Length: 374
Image (cartoon, rainbow, N blue to C red):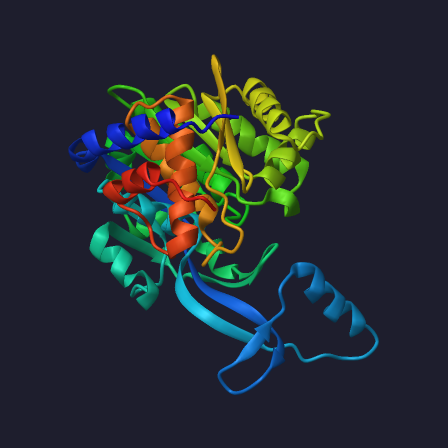
């Protein structure tokens, strides 16, 4: 596992020198969209404005378990309402780097939901249906994402063509340096959309190979057969793109099980080996796995693990993985190797969880230069 001052210095310098270049790049991202409420659960209340928070998921589970065969009233306090969904968060972070972003997804219809208005000022944003909703319960040891997402049934190929336009979609798909379609798990028709792209758009692609990013987004509730189908479709895109699959730690081991890999080592070395084996099995350009404290990436001839700037008590954790993905993809768009791309990924995520803001490239370089102690 690496994270040397020399690597951070090199990454910081490369980012500063690439600011103008990044500003000329374009990304095309979709297709989900959520209104996120960031929520703390009340343990005890001292006054109208003061309360003690339930600190951990374990403590909440104990409270809920004690209510079995009885009842309970557990208060929720909304700390923030913000744009959500893997796609909007990742795309918003990419736009902070200066990249020209086009986003198509579920952001409110016929009018954008207010939480997406600022995003729409920074990117070329198009909505095809109503947004879904997430109650994001945050704790010191993790988070619970409680989703209301029937609206995402309207994210389908017919709606994309009707409410955005096939010609416009094809143009962005054909020209942008990065194409990313994320949150496969929560979009019931995403596999069908990918099949339509491969049938209708991929045969017409021209020009150099570009980057394509996928994020399954917690596929536990989907069947092994459906997951295997999605992985096969990713492989189909590799014919035309350098494909990247982003996974968190939990997702990595779920994919391993689907692929029949008997891997259970959660150490840095184990995660790196897991990324290598998934990349070999799925046969795409790069697989990246990002636990909380570090991240690993594996391509055919380059496997690396980079330690991140772990934050014990983050200001926000919802969206940390999407910020990692945006930073990693920034590195890949700029031609960085896996180690440097992982460095941009963990630093982007580390900046976000400390500030609840997406960094620009100068801020990213600054954090690399003044690396946090905790």
